[in-house]
Length: 368
Image (cartoon, rainbow, N blue to C red; front, side, top):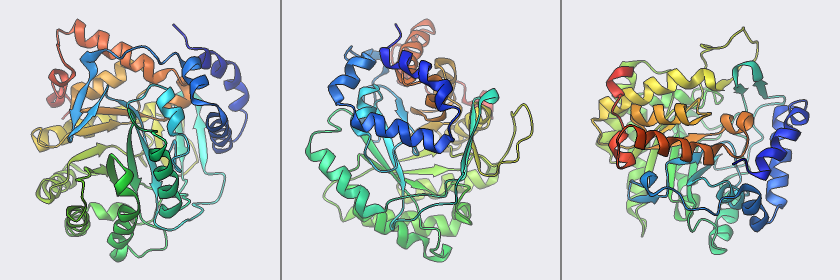
């Protein structure tokens, strides 16, 4: 069954695709924020129960199903009720930086429709941790997120020297962690100069040790996830895994956007991180490598190239416990999460699995 909102999106999509990609995203956000939650639920038809086969516990958090929205969709925590209406189990807010910053000059987001891809060089445009914390706290008090799990993705300001990056992450963590179900530590955006150097062992250890120590002072243990790049060598990934396991963080997110241009049907001149369908194989392999390297000791959130149930199911079989999409929503419309949930449940039963967890990582060695 096609939801009314999906039908509406298909009608307006050709018009929206004539508009600058970031401007179109902003307009969609304004519309979603203005629509009452009850209307959105009716338009999406998300009142039906989710197949219990899909429920899973990850890092001590219960998720109704594995499908969520990746960071970048809602940078200010203003679309939480809309995300709940879309039927996702979780959304990752951000990336949020300690201080407000404008990001890179526009235009900085580009669609590649023939490949189902997007290139962005947003550069951590953010209203700042204090502003997002206020919005998130008020939303929590209104009961938003009772069923929707809310992650917060944090990063450093562009003008903060790399040797002081850990201070920025601590400031953002202090402001946001108390209202987050989990915190994602973003060291992997290709659009902040030098950021990916934080994958190096000494820098990463200092960063994660500081965050874990800060978390210990909290009344509630907030899970910490590390978001990694799809462009790291295997040896570098192994180093990241070793530090992650030693630090006591709770999971990994694979992956961020890529600087590679594999899978594009024609060359493009835009600089920035590539997401969408061309990222699928690279993200899938990174998920599988991390699953093998961690030997199942850290859960993995799989991100990259998910635009149908088959791609989502492939990430799960490679080792992902949860699966996020964003670019797929741009091309496939707001009904995508519901289609993922239905399609993956069908595939799990067809393959003889009685629970989602049984399928996680069964194909991991195939991709390594």
